[in-house]
Image (tube, rainbow, N blue to C red):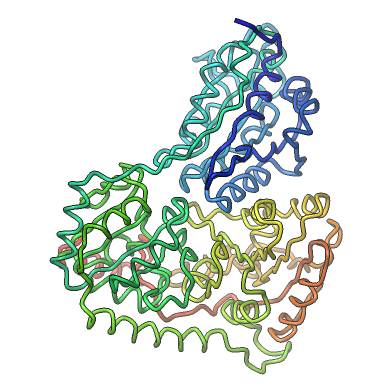
Length: 613
């Protein structure tokens, strides 16, 4: 058998460059590139190998390790998990900076390959710089932090171990049910060690992302449940997008008179104006969708993990309703005692359609919900409306900012957010007009994802306008990739909503019976409040930037941003107290304040009385 003598790092990089995926008859490299911040734990090993392979596998230099991982994750999400990126760092703080992003990828079932440097496998120079020492366990490394937030974890202590580790990594990254982050912890001495690797290990490999078909008995049970139902409701999750089932789901809903609601991950799979689309469901849902969820006798989750925001902390659905879960992940498919259909969303819905015969949902059920949808449209129009208040009056609400953006952005723009009050307002109000136009990370609700994630979205779809909505709190937490976007020539539109602190949590704090404390800057311990000039800061990072005062000014600024050729930041002051009160559902947040505890206990008692968990 012929072999190639390579360092471990060279062999790893060569392997990555030869992995392809076949989608719709087109073969594409699976790895679109590697994000890297080099240090003593990876520069001499993996850094050398990446430098030599830069034509086949581009390396992108970021400014923050967590941010570059967010960019890689957002890229994979926007690419519907058909492509991914890798991230490499030094040993120590560079590596642990990525753990938050790994958790985000794990929660959201998104593929990313983490390649952190690690300690010496030989232990000859131990303890090396940045090494964690445990007096009770000599095998401990800081990279063990990745174990609970990785779908697959391995520590490479010998060169030949990658012969088994890399194929295992690929199966996880491409698995429709167990997809998620992979961590290969690379001991820094092993990266530079040579080995005679089998030449066939580097043959081109074309992977096909599986679409597991459903069990016929499970489909038969689901079809029977629909035939018995007088009020069915589909709840669409991210699995609809990842299976490429958007058009098929829209057609099924129309043909079978099936109303549907959207989770954060599922929103935008089907355009907002589909007649059966009731909008977001749950804590941040529309009144139309939540009315349907409360009164439906059959809830069919399609590619959703049914987290608490979707289910109103398990209190939204009628306890007598039957729940069905269509999901490629068997764990998700079994939640809430559901009738499980463990399968690809598209394959399951196709099989279901064939099994249903001429069945259609009752017309009266759909008509009632469509009336509710029309009523919600009036709520949205009112929330979006720009009033005539000038800059000296109360600043606009988040909803009014969204209205301006809805009017000013092109129909195929991608709007994105991640934390604070914006995901809630977007889930309720945003009208997604084109597939892939809604990218909100709310599985982990991670502050700091917004700008870095927008960069990843732009890399996945450079032809589209990408508009990141970010609060002042998230902006201050992680803004460094503005400079990266400028450096890479990837134009973003970034709208900073400055409400003077953590406005969303301030509202929650007050609603829970507390007083304003340590959330808005004015309520924090301070000698004097900082006068933060976000526009000047953004310009210092290389972007174009401006501050506007009204929503009318914002619309004009967005038009200027659309005409710009590099990243443009628009800053607008907003009201931290105003949020859309219509819609929504209960969220179980345990409260301690005596003024609110009684109401909380009463609510729990009512839920138990109704037969909910």
